[in-house]
Length: 160
Image (cartoon, helix red, strand yellow):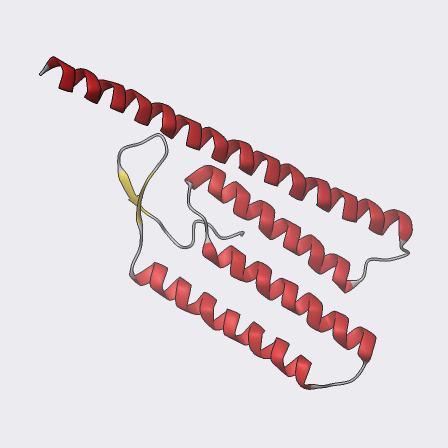
């Protein structure tokens, strides 16, 4: 009986150590990703100010992508919840950047523009579906430092 109890206590200790290690890895990885996002945004901004006379729409949309990535990392730090909508926002911004770039450089309409526009429309519909589902079927999460479950409000992770 005592051997079984000792084995269970070792298992519980190893589980706790494993959980701490995984959480530490998540924080370290998120910190590194956040630093890389900030570094890239600063590098792009310096490049715009030093090498160009003005910021193009491509540059501005790239900075918006960095902003969304940073917000996504920040939300994950606070809630341990990855907002899928932010990934879709980033994809829409990237496709919009591509669309504007193609139009500025080629100056002609073709099927590729229609495909990119269709992809943007599909992603916009996906955001609508995700928001509808999260509003009508909310997730129940626990705050990091609390055992009290709370409703995950889809409006909480918006950038206002």
